[in-house]
Length: 222
Image (cartoon, rainbow, N blue to C red; front, side):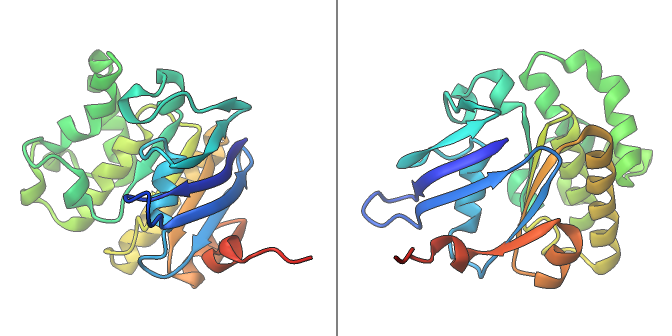
């Protein structure tokens, strides 16, 4: 179970963009988080993935509270998440080839030797031809780069996937292909999914349930 308990977060403690949010996601379930740009949903997604420390509240992963954030999180917790961001060019090191980009998480946990076997397998899975793997981000399209970023998110076989506007910059065919890859992976591994976006039709077709940001932030009565 992934639980966000009373999360308050932002980039200025005097004006947090997320206030007192509770969210629960069961293993194998998929939740779409719908809301307009700038409402705070991406910040919440980063907190859920242990990439942003909240000002208050707690992230609980399979019954254990998060014990750190970013590189200070215990390996077992930080590698439980695979994250795909909206803008692949901002989340990819422009100096790396696509092969090296996909292998980044393996090197970070001392498993670089596994790249030779895993990178071609994942590249094929996300629809990247072998001829593209030696190229750098500026030499491929946004859609091709996002395919590589999805492969990177899957390379450590995470139990939780966070897709933050993953398809916002993609055409319909690439969107369908990447959603299919995510769902195929989830069916195989029983991974949970938090999909953040502003496309209600996509989220409602993709996820088991969809909740609007306003419903998370509405004050309780009674």
